[in-house]
Image (cartoon, rainbow, N blue to C red; front, side, top):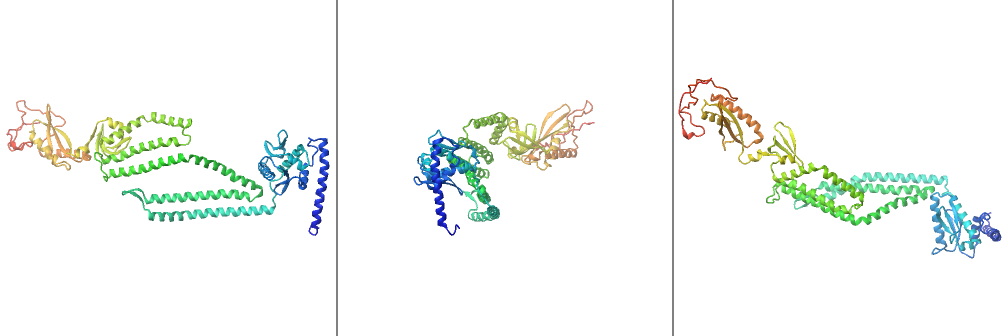
Length: 575
């Protein structure tokens, strides 16, 4: 019927609308005369808005269409907004309220304002103008009640109306998008090493290293590592970007969550927008920090290269020893980094806040009161660096500790004793103790090894000297020039004390040299038939005999060969 007679259908609808319009025009004035401000006597206000708006010729009617539902019509303008702009604004507010699940019971009218307002809770939805009332053929209060019902019905409408077919299509699209997301991640994961290797190969083939005046600052491995890290970061940024696109797209496929999809990007991008704006405002400070950090970083690299060149002797400065290069670089690095922190501090976020300043003051107090001993050790280490009392590997004696220096740090010095025991000595104690550097002395004329024996008065001293000197010459490591010599250090009650002194340039072998020297003294004295009277022993003799030892004419003085024989006599009997 509808298909065969479309003109009849249109004419019938027109007559029906005209009849309803006439009926409404007849009823509304009567109701207005009886109770002009009563909302209970206008139960068909929503239908009246739809009907009157459809055939209103005196004013232009702008429909309020929400989805597939026509809620009503607006007439005229408010302020700078015409009817169409008013309709769009009202629909936007209604859509937001529906997404927020604002109940229809919260809709109310505020008739005290001019023009009156229709509110959902405390949120204004639309202002009812006299033009709207004239367009509806109602009084202003009746029009407010009618639009109040329109807003309430709009909030009670379901967000979407979806069929099983639409749900299946939406599920299929979500699965397709999920598969594409997974496939994209797999492709990014497989492409990352290939792209990184390709970029690294191309860049390193052209730039093998970064050098300045022959000093390498950045090696080829460092360049390749930086490029691989950059490609890795790019891969994860793209992965996160795909994830951000995936979620709103998956929500948008379902009509029931389409509003959530529209709000998803808004909720996600609002904090990002605020953060981006804060970063834009902070860019000048960031630029200052970057400049300070880059200058400090490159300055430390140059300083390190310069110190390495000084330590290796490539660059020489008069009065500056190569072993000063490393500790000087460490000290300067600490001062430079501290100075850079002081410069960066004012540009840090919230650096002027009381909390930030309180934490900094607390840390400063901890460092001040908790590092007094450490500071004294650091000062001692710095002083010893420039005093150069010893180097690593030197044989030294620090107070009662003797051994080889195995480590010289900024806080402590470690010494390995001849018993293979490593002793750690704080630098403040090293600086406050007496110190002997055997290796430093050995570099010039050699270190003197000395040992003593006691021999009775009955043995001529030239024979003792000769035996001691012969023993010293038999020890490997004893220098011939300057040669060994003997000192008679004491004339005791029963014996004479002889001290053998010998030069060596191997102080690290001091213990072994003493042992060999003592063995050779025993061998030489046994060959010379001289008895070592250490410890002291008593000689029993006839008191009429003299204690002066006889000296044979054939025995020269070993300490002064030019004197020749010293005389002769009989040896006393000694028991």
